[in-house]
Amino acid sequence: MPDEQQRITVLLVDDEENILRALKRLLMDEDFDVETAESGEAGLEKLQSLENVGLIVSDQRMPGMNGAEFLGRSQEFAPNAQRILLTGYSDINATIEAINKGGASRYLSKPWDDDELTQVIRDAVALYLQGEEKRRLNDIINQQKRELEEWNVSLKKRLLQSSATIREQSQAIKSLDDKNPMTLIHRAFDGFFEIMGDRNAAHARTVSTLVTDVARKMGLDAETVAAFRLAALLHDAGKFGCLPAGMNKHPEEMSESESAEYRQHPLRGEDMFRQVEELAAALPLIRSHHEAYDGSGFPDGLSGESIPLGARLIAIADHIEKCARSVEHNRADYALMSARFRGGTLLDPMLIARFQGITKVVYFEGKKSGSLSDVEVGPHELIPGMVLARDVESGSGVLLMQRGSVLDLAGVTLIRIHYRKNPPSHGIFVQIVGD
Image 1: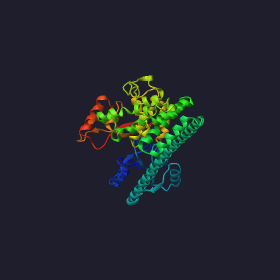
Image 2: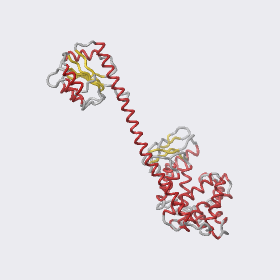
Image 3: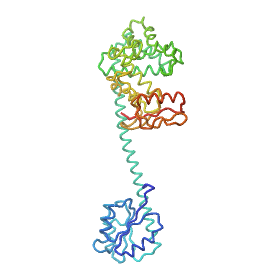
Image 4: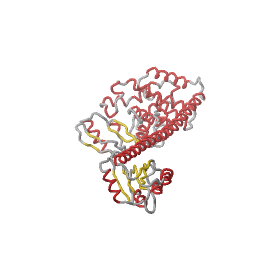
């Protein structure tokens, strides 16, 4: 249906000014606007500037351009308008021409009956509105059809990518000797985590999946892939000795004692498996998975490429999985965006892009690429560079930052302080653009 704020326009064309005045008086109380023109040529010129013309009423006998010719040419400027021909002569040929060539849907003879003419015009406007509504619904259906087709194409690509990933993983596994001790150990621990079934077990298995896929696509040899795969599965095993309350908090929310305990889990994990000779290649990766690319991590303060490659991959996968799990939708896009913002500080910026394909598969939601949306995150998940999707207010309604603002370190600090002192009932909404 046309915009409710835009009224329908009815154009009246007749070379007799008194007839136009009579028609305008007749229609003055109707719920549409009335425009007039005193010739076919003037009518065509006026149509070029009018909008939402729903009906054109034209006299047949006019100097120069007659009604049938005018109605025919008017279709160029108002193709969807209804058309009515007024004639004071019994000219059947002109009427036929107006219907066949001019697109007229009705003709009336002069002199007309006021009530009949008014009703005919009302019916014609109603018919135009019905046509506009039908066209609007068809446009919606066609748009939805195009979106569905695009979604189906995307889904097929994702399914093909998933199938390829599964096939490649199967081939990689088959390339390993089934009697290889590392393979057997991985199967044992994978089964253990599957039985556990809690969030930590799901985290470990997902991180292992992400790292394995990336390592394999990097062309690493089967033995290295197996070591990375197992290290990723066991990277948080040292947490099993931590108190549950401290283990799952955000690091910035931990007390000093909880933080000290948390920072020990990479060392504890290394110690747990030190006596297992077959896990020797995985131990440095377990120890170093919390080292930061800029040297601010733990336990050894390693930086850049001095951090083992497998540990750098585990760090990215660990970050992606935690971010994806922290939001309800747009998981892949949010996790990848957050990882990119951490590139060069926490994470190796050269490796992050390698996780895009597998992340989209693991957290597939059927989103169109390039679509703009938002996610709700906690104050500790904010990173400089993120764009606010909604205004940020304190618990008492004080505006802290406006939507569209790009967060810098000062903005992140401001929001965290207010959310700690006077938190609202919801998180912060940040902007996400689908890859």
